[in-house]
Image (cartoon, rainbow, N blue to C red; front, side, top):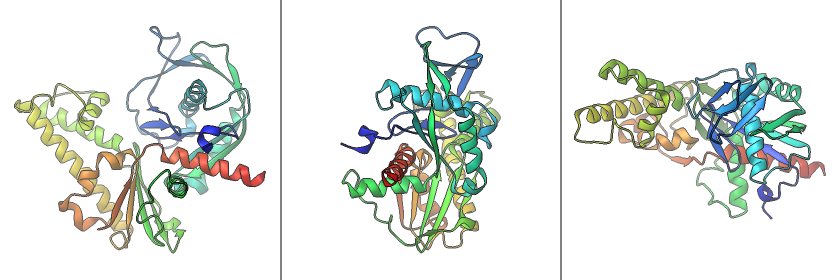
Length: 335
């Protein structure tokens, strides 16, 4: 039986992205809203402290220090409830929580994250008005983002679940993880992570969405929410791009193309400035942002500011599966 299906050690692996929350198989937008009463029409909610918390579906503002707010924990409660509902987690047993941080933040924030969740241990999880059950963490594991995804991909390739990426075992390698809030780089030299070259840039897709909102307001006089801007960016149906013969639609398309290209150009330029060997080693792009911006990243016009050898590992669940795999591995070794 696959370790993710067996879940012998009752692991809850959560990738707390600024744009979306991911478990090994589930995903939902990070945005939350709080009310004093339960929602109508069967909307899922968590009762926590004195409020009822719902998933807003909106793209939240970027938060640098997530442990200053309750949102991080409420997002974790939603993840636990949904994993239990889908019979992938047993809430009657203690849970091993596995989460992640950008590699450059591991030294400074790992203990803070562990403390944050341990202080909330045994919180009663009340989902959709249920009687509730104490969510007991028997341990909290914190792993480096992006590197955990690489660990999972190597494991999955060894079991035949995934094809082995061409560059994943290169001794020197650049990893670029483009998320909602940040784009994080990890530089590996001779098989070891070079911490001084691990960078975090506030250039995730949330900031691209903000740029589109501002450009449409300034250039077209059109005010839109982050959700509509996200629809436009993702190519979902919306009134602003539905008619290619409409002048407004053409203007919006030009704004989107320009914003995407400038965003990627800015990111790749910063990486080139900070990592002198960025073009001399293979580069693996990870995350939903990398999938979204793949065409711009690989465009001929930006070839001079990126590695000529690139691969994309963009499944949004890879980090969470990496946290799960590494926790399962540690538990088995202890046993």
